[in-house]
Length: 149
Image 1 (tube, helix red, strand yellow):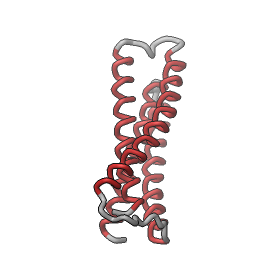
Image 2: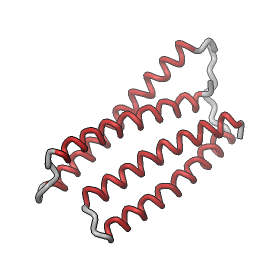
Image 3: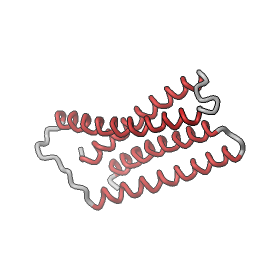
Image 4: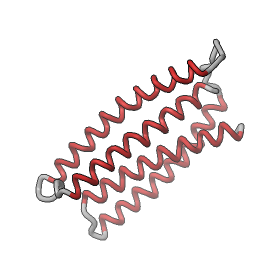
């Protein structure tokens, strides 16, 4: 298995884990009314900062963990860590499509805001779009590698 494919699996797992935990926590806090009132957006901002910091830590830990697991399971004593032209093209194609998805999602969030949705809902929609675009990018990259591009 290619080094890049291993990292894509780790990135996909960390993205799903971090955003699942975030949205689970936010849902519970929203149900408790912790985002109501003048301090609601401050709490949301704090949660987003925790999301960013936790996401970085979890992503690094997943990369290390997945590389250890794949190294144990891989019989190849000399794994290829080259990043060639094909890898760059696969990454660029997947990132381009992911950015288009993000752009559409952000426009949708701005439309929601223009129609009177709360800032809480708009911020969380933008985060959901960000998470889904990360998953979309990883899935597209895996599909392009399997197809042989």
